[in-house]
Amino acid sequence: MKLYKLAKGSLLQHNGSSYIIDDEWDKLINRDGLAAYLELITTETTALSTEVENEHLNGKILPPIGSQEVWAAGVTYLRSRDARMEESETGASLYDKVYDAPRPELFFKALAHRVSGHKGEVYIRKDSEWNVPEPELTLFVNAKGNIQGYTIGNDMSSRSIEGENALYLPQAKVYEKSAALGPCLYVTSSAIPGETVISMNIKRAGELVFEDETTVSRIKRSFTELTGYLYSECDFPNGCFLMTGTCLVPPPSFTLQADDVVEISIDHIGTMVNVIGLNPKHK
Ligand code: DO4
Ligand code: MG
Figure 1 (tube, rainbow, N blue to C red):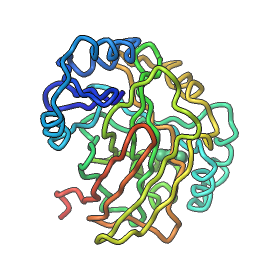
Figure 2 (cartoon, rainbow, N blue to C red; figure 1 turned 30 degrees about the vertical axis):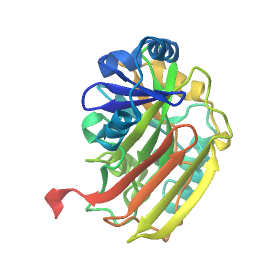
Figure 3 (tube, protein in one colour; figure 1 turned 30 degrees about the horizontal axis):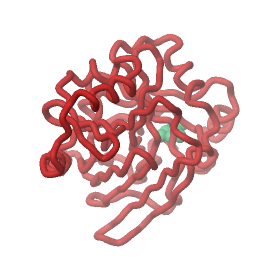
Figure 4 (cartoon, helix red, strand yellow; figure 1 turned 180 degrees about the vertical axis):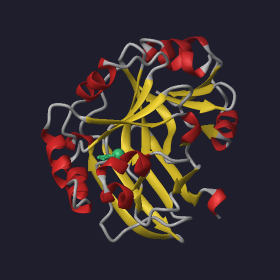
Protein backbone atom coordinates (compact mmCIF):
# COMPACT_ATOMS: atom_id res chain seq x y z
CA MET A 1 0.00 0.00 0.00
CA LYS A 2 1.26 3.46 -0.85
CA LEU A 3 0.30 6.45 1.24
CA TYR A 4 0.88 9.91 -0.28
CA LYS A 5 0.77 13.06 1.85
CA LEU A 6 -1.29 15.78 0.15
CA ALA A 7 -1.71 19.45 1.07
CA LYS A 8 -5.01 18.38 2.62
CA GLY A 9 -5.34 14.76 3.82
CA SER A 10 -3.64 11.81 2.18
CA LEU A 11 -4.14 9.48 -0.75
CA LEU A 12 -3.96 5.71 -0.27
CA GLN A 13 -3.23 3.42 -3.25
CA HIS A 14 -4.06 -0.24 -2.85
CA ASN A 15 -4.73 -3.00 -5.38
CA GLY A 16 -5.13 -0.54 -8.27
CA SER A 17 -7.61 1.76 -6.46
CA SER A 18 -7.11 5.03 -4.61
CA TYR A 19 -8.85 6.48 -1.56
CA ILE A 20 -8.74 9.83 0.23
CA ILE A 21 -8.11 9.73 3.97
CA ASP A 22 -8.85 12.78 6.14
CA ASP A 23 -7.02 11.64 9.32
CA GLU A 24 -4.32 13.97 10.59
CA TRP A 25 -0.95 12.75 9.20
CA ASP A 26 1.02 12.28 12.42
CA LYS A 27 -1.83 10.50 14.13
CA LEU A 28 -2.47 8.30 11.09
CA ILE A 29 1.07 7.05 10.48
CA ASN A 30 1.90 6.61 14.15
CA ARG A 31 -0.94 4.21 14.92
CA ASP A 32 0.11 0.65 15.63
CA GLY A 33 -1.01 -1.84 12.98
CA LEU A 34 -1.09 0.86 10.29
CA ALA A 35 -1.25 -1.66 7.42
CA ALA A 36 -4.35 -3.35 8.86
CA TYR A 37 -6.01 0.02 9.56
CA LEU A 38 -5.42 1.19 5.97
CA GLU A 39 -6.71 -2.08 4.59
CA LEU A 40 -9.90 -1.61 6.59
CA ILE A 41 -10.30 1.89 5.15
CA THR A 42 -10.27 0.46 1.62
CA THR A 43 -13.30 -1.71 2.47
CA GLU A 44 -15.28 1.20 3.94
CA THR A 45 -14.43 4.07 1.55
CA THR A 46 -15.44 4.77 -2.04
CA ALA A 47 -12.53 4.59 -4.48
CA LEU A 48 -11.59 7.67 -6.51
CA SER A 49 -12.14 7.85 -10.25
CA THR A 50 -8.91 7.62 -12.28
CA GLU A 51 -9.33 11.26 -13.27
CA VAL A 52 -9.47 12.50 -9.67
CA GLU A 53 -6.63 10.17 -8.65
CA ASN A 54 -4.42 11.60 -11.44
CA GLU A 55 -5.30 15.16 -10.48
CA HIS A 56 -4.06 14.49 -6.95
CA LEU A 57 -0.92 12.61 -7.96
CA ASN A 58 0.05 15.14 -10.64
CA GLY A 59 -0.48 17.97 -8.15
CA LYS A 60 1.67 18.71 -5.15
CA ILE A 61 2.81 15.63 -3.22
CA LEU A 62 4.36 16.55 0.12
CA PRO A 63 7.24 14.68 1.75
CA PRO A 64 5.67 11.98 3.99
CA ILE A 65 6.71 13.71 7.21
CA GLY A 66 4.91 15.71 9.89
CA SER A 67 6.47 16.50 13.24
CA GLN A 68 8.90 13.54 13.26
CA GLU A 69 12.69 13.81 13.54
CA VAL A 70 14.80 12.36 10.74
CA TRP A 71 17.84 10.36 11.87
CA ALA A 72 20.41 8.60 9.72
CA ALA A 73 22.63 5.56 10.07
CA GLY A 74 26.11 5.60 8.55
CA VAL A 75 28.68 3.17 7.19
CA THR A 76 26.16 0.35 6.99
CA TYR A 77 27.29 -0.78 3.52
CA LEU A 78 30.88 -1.67 2.50
CA ARG A 79 30.63 0.82 -0.35
CA SER A 80 30.10 3.67 2.13
CA ARG A 81 32.92 2.51 4.41
CA ASP A 82 35.40 2.28 1.50
CA ALA A 83 34.44 5.68 0.04
CA ARG A 84 34.84 7.37 3.42
CA MET A 85 38.18 5.75 4.11
CA GLU A 86 39.38 7.11 0.73
CA GLU A 87 38.08 10.65 1.31
CA SER A 88 39.48 11.12 4.81
CA GLU A 89 43.20 11.23 5.65
CA THR A 90 42.60 11.65 9.36
CA GLY A 91 39.46 9.60 9.92
CA ALA A 92 40.00 6.44 7.85
CA SER A 93 40.28 4.15 10.86
CA LEU A 94 37.07 5.61 12.39
CA TYR A 95 35.00 4.32 9.47
CA ASP A 96 36.73 0.96 9.49
CA LYS A 97 36.07 0.56 13.21
CA VAL A 98 32.45 1.68 13.16
CA TYR A 99 31.62 -0.71 10.31
CA ASP A 100 32.65 -3.64 12.53
CA ALA A 101 31.66 -2.30 15.95
CA PRO A 102 28.51 -3.54 17.73
CA ARG A 103 27.23 0.07 18.08
CA PRO A 104 26.18 1.62 14.75
CA GLU A 105 26.79 5.19 13.68
CA LEU A 106 23.53 7.14 14.13
CA PHE A 107 23.19 10.89 13.69
CA PHE A 108 20.45 13.47 13.76
CA LYS A 109 19.69 14.70 10.24
CA ALA A 110 16.64 16.98 10.03
CA LEU A 111 13.23 18.16 11.06
CA ALA A 112 10.49 18.61 8.45
CA HIS A 113 11.37 22.22 7.61
CA ARG A 114 14.71 21.09 6.10
CA VAL A 115 13.18 18.16 4.16
CA SER A 116 12.22 18.37 0.48
CA GLY A 117 9.81 16.05 -1.26
CA HIS A 118 9.46 14.41 -4.67
CA LYS A 119 10.19 16.95 -7.46
CA GLY A 120 11.55 19.43 -4.87
CA GLU A 121 14.97 21.03 -4.71
CA VAL A 122 17.83 19.82 -2.53
CA TYR A 123 20.78 22.13 -1.91
CA ILE A 124 24.55 21.88 -2.07
CA ARG A 125 26.54 24.08 0.33
CA LYS A 126 28.29 27.18 -0.97
CA ASP A 127 31.42 26.39 1.11
CA SER A 128 31.74 22.80 -0.15
CA GLU A 129 33.46 21.81 -3.37
CA TRP A 130 32.63 18.06 -3.29
CA ASN A 131 28.96 17.12 -2.94
CA VAL A 132 26.98 13.93 -3.43
CA PRO A 133 23.46 12.60 -2.98
CA GLU A 134 23.12 9.50 -0.78
CA PRO A 135 20.21 7.23 -1.77
CA GLU A 136 18.94 5.50 1.36
CA LEU A 137 16.09 3.17 2.15
CA THR A 138 14.34 5.03 4.97
CA LEU A 139 12.27 3.42 7.71
CA PHE A 140 9.27 4.98 9.35
CA VAL A 141 9.27 3.70 12.93
CA ASN A 142 6.28 4.53 15.16
CA ALA A 143 6.36 5.69 18.79
CA LYS A 144 6.37 2.08 20.00
CA GLY A 145 9.47 1.32 17.94
CA ASN A 146 7.66 -0.74 15.27
CA ILE A 147 8.62 -0.32 11.61
CA GLN A 148 5.38 0.70 9.89
CA GLY A 149 6.63 1.59 6.45
CA TYR A 150 9.41 2.60 4.11
CA THR A 151 10.22 5.60 1.98
CA ILE A 152 13.06 6.83 -0.23
CA GLY A 153 15.60 9.13 1.42
CA ASN A 154 18.36 11.34 0.08
CA ASP A 155 21.00 12.16 2.70
CA MET A 156 22.76 15.02 0.84
CA SER A 157 26.38 15.22 1.93
CA SER A 158 29.46 17.39 1.58
CA ARG A 159 32.37 14.99 1.11
CA SER A 160 34.97 17.78 1.29
CA ILE A 161 33.77 19.00 4.70
CA GLU A 162 33.34 15.50 6.13
CA GLY A 163 36.72 14.41 4.66
CA GLU A 164 38.56 17.39 6.15
CA ASN A 165 37.72 16.37 9.71
CA ALA A 166 35.22 13.77 10.97
CA LEU A 167 34.13 16.24 13.67
CA TYR A 168 32.67 18.38 10.88
CA LEU A 169 30.08 15.68 10.16
CA PRO A 170 27.08 17.75 11.35
CA GLN A 171 28.06 20.58 8.98
CA ALA A 172 28.57 18.14 6.11
CA LYS A 173 25.14 16.67 6.72
CA VAL A 174 22.81 19.31 8.18
CA TYR A 175 21.92 22.50 6.31
CA GLU A 176 18.88 23.87 4.46
CA LYS A 177 17.27 21.31 2.13
CA SER A 178 19.94 18.72 2.86
CA ALA A 179 17.39 15.90 3.02
CA ALA A 180 14.61 14.60 0.81
CA LEU A 181 11.94 12.00 1.52
CA GLY A 182 9.31 10.67 -0.86
CA PRO A 183 7.33 10.15 -2.93
CA CYS A 184 5.15 8.11 -0.55
CA LEU A 185 5.18 5.90 2.51
CA TYR A 186 5.09 2.24 1.45
CA VAL A 187 3.11 0.57 4.22
CA THR A 188 3.41 -3.17 4.73
CA SER A 189 3.14 -5.53 7.65
CA SER A 190 5.99 -7.68 6.31
CA ALA A 191 9.66 -6.71 6.14
CA ILE A 192 10.90 -5.31 2.84
CA PRO A 193 12.77 -8.17 1.08
CA GLY A 194 16.57 -8.28 0.78
CA GLU A 195 16.38 -8.49 -3.01
CA THR A 196 14.77 -5.02 -3.13
CA VAL A 197 16.75 -2.96 -5.67
CA ILE A 198 17.96 0.57 -4.90
CA SER A 199 19.09 2.53 -7.95
CA MET A 200 20.19 6.08 -8.63
CA ASN A 201 20.90 8.07 -11.75
CA ILE A 202 22.06 11.66 -12.12
CA LYS A 203 21.51 13.77 -15.24
CA ARG A 204 23.26 16.99 -16.22
CA ALA A 205 21.69 19.04 -19.02
CA GLY A 206 19.74 15.91 -19.98
CA GLU A 207 22.86 13.69 -20.20
CA LEU A 208 23.39 10.74 -17.86
CA VAL A 209 26.49 11.42 -15.69
CA PHE A 210 26.09 8.66 -13.08
CA GLU A 211 24.06 5.50 -12.65
CA ASP A 212 24.35 2.50 -10.36
CA GLU A 213 22.24 0.06 -8.41
CA THR A 214 22.45 -2.52 -5.65
CA THR A 215 20.17 -4.47 -3.33
CA VAL A 216 19.15 -3.97 0.29
CA SER A 217 20.64 -7.40 1.13
CA ARG A 218 24.15 -5.85 1.09
CA ILE A 219 23.47 -3.93 4.31
CA LYS A 220 25.69 -4.95 7.24
CA ARG A 221 23.11 -4.51 10.01
CA SER A 222 19.48 -5.47 10.53
CA PHE A 223 16.81 -2.78 10.74
CA THR A 224 15.81 -3.92 14.23
CA GLU A 225 19.44 -3.52 15.34
CA LEU A 226 19.45 0.09 14.04
CA THR A 227 16.07 1.00 15.54
CA GLY A 228 16.99 -0.76 18.79
CA TYR A 229 20.01 1.54 19.29
CA LEU A 230 18.06 4.62 18.20
CA TYR A 231 15.12 3.98 20.53
CA SER A 232 17.13 2.73 23.50
CA GLU A 233 17.59 6.20 25.07
CA CYS A 234 15.29 8.42 22.97
CA ASP A 235 11.51 8.66 22.88
CA PHE A 236 9.78 9.65 19.67
CA PRO A 237 6.16 10.52 20.53
CA ASN A 238 5.22 10.92 16.84
CA GLY A 239 7.53 8.23 15.51
CA CYS A 240 10.75 8.80 13.62
CA PHE A 241 12.26 8.44 10.14
CA LEU A 242 15.55 6.55 9.99
CA MET A 243 17.70 6.68 6.84
CA THR A 244 19.56 3.36 6.78
CA GLY A 245 22.82 4.44 5.12
CA THR A 246 24.02 4.85 1.58
CA CYS A 247 24.75 1.86 -0.61
CA LEU A 248 25.82 3.82 -3.72
CA VAL A 249 28.60 6.39 -3.95
CA PRO A 250 29.65 8.15 -7.18
CA PRO A 251 33.40 7.98 -7.99
CA PRO A 252 35.77 10.55 -6.37
CA SER A 253 35.90 12.56 -9.63
CA PHE A 254 32.17 13.29 -9.35
CA THR A 255 30.59 16.28 -7.66
CA LEU A 256 27.05 17.61 -8.00
CA GLN A 257 26.32 20.89 -9.78
CA ALA A 258 23.30 23.19 -9.62
CA ASP A 259 20.47 22.01 -11.91
CA ASP A 260 21.60 18.35 -11.89
CA VAL A 261 18.62 16.01 -11.63
CA VAL A 262 18.88 13.11 -9.15
CA GLU A 263 16.51 10.18 -9.58
CA ILE A 264 16.40 7.52 -6.84
CA SER A 265 14.24 4.41 -7.23
CA ILE A 266 13.53 1.66 -4.72
CA ASP A 267 11.42 -1.40 -5.60
CA HIS A 268 7.93 -1.36 -4.03
CA ILE A 269 8.16 2.37 -3.15
CA GLY A 270 8.68 4.15 -6.48
CA THR A 271 10.93 6.95 -7.72
CA MET A 272 11.88 10.26 -6.14
CA VAL A 273 13.25 13.04 -8.36
CA ASN A 274 15.11 16.05 -6.96
CA VAL A 275 16.79 19.00 -8.62
CA ILE A 276 20.06 20.34 -7.18
CA GLY A 277 19.95 23.98 -6.14
CA LEU A 278 21.86 26.58 -4.14
CA ASN A 279 20.38 28.38 -1.20
CA PRO A 280 19.02 31.62 -2.80
CA LYS A 281 20.73 33.70 -0.14
CA HIS A 282 24.07 32.79 -1.80
CA LYS A 283 23.02 33.54 -5.37
O1 DO4 B 1 30.07 8.60 8.58
C1 DO4 B 1 29.57 9.41 7.92
C2 DO4 B 1 28.23 9.37 7.33
C3 DO4 B 1 27.86 8.05 6.75
C4 DO4 B 1 26.62 8.06 5.94
O2 DO4 B 1 25.87 9.01 5.87
C5 DO4 B 1 26.26 6.84 5.19
O3 DO4 B 1 26.99 5.84 5.22
O4 DO4 B 1 25.22 6.86 4.55
MG1 MG C 1 24.15 8.71 4.51
